[in-house]
Length: 214
Length: 214
Image 1: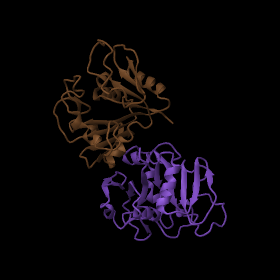
Image 2: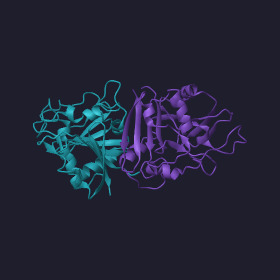
Image 3: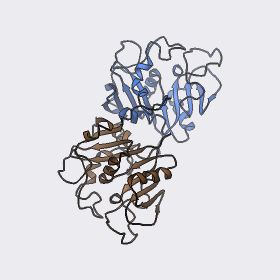
Image 4: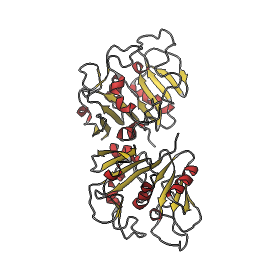
């Protein structure tokens, strides 16, 4: 089986915003409320961060239940790991996820600033100064035959799209419009020269966008 | 994790027909053309019977890729295994799937007529004379913690629905109307007293019906 590079459950607003400015330790998505952005996913039975029983088993659940399946490694931008910029002041910050992050694979955090590898539960964070292409090579080698998920944020995802490294992609689009923030795209139609695009509205109000290479 | 009883990728026509009369060794679906019924699934990259590379990765693929995941056992009606009725004339018939059936789990074939257990590849067929409730108990015990899939045909599925044994269910509805054949339902709305129902039209022309318990 060929290893694929995939995007999964990235959620953006109708105007393409995936995160706000002014990220801080208290606000991983900055001025954007992630509860609002990810309400569709949180309502499903299979959402990776669900802690209580229950949840829907409609279309949205078929999407969230696949979040970890077949994934052997993730690549994320530094901003997904934490709000710091520049050299790491210390190594006390270990991400937003506590002792058992929901990745359960090697995770490559892209940063120009070196830091020792960090293992939390079943997840190992490697801090990597590399181009998107080189990062994909490293992640594929570490993925034990599995696929590589580009985990975001949207700025990182744009870089991987610009480098034409994505094989297929699921983006959830909420009906909210924000007007400002970090954008994934001006319009998803900009990608249709390279990708098939299927739009599927869900009962939750979001529209699933499925992309796969032409 | 609670073991669930699930239905997956059963396909029926707009008038609820899942198979035709006049089943034979050459025509597992009788007067209904399975190629027409399952064209949507066959076009996906992940369909369990796909033998060549390629295929779509849109919505339909998110459905077919989940066909085996988390499933620890299947229960099927005798008619899904073969066209014979009454006592088995011999044990030469081994189902429609060749040496490596696509189940890879224990499969319980409901029949009043005893027959020795049959192992083909990773699939073991047990021939079971039991009520739906008892069959689910047996299948759960054999599923190694996994879920139980009710594999059809539609007559068998109706019996499990009548016995209220299904937890959640995916049915694909094609736009074809046949007028005659074995029906799953008069209308899916008959089930909404017990189940949530979400209908999701796909670009392929079929409408995915997702049911889960209220």
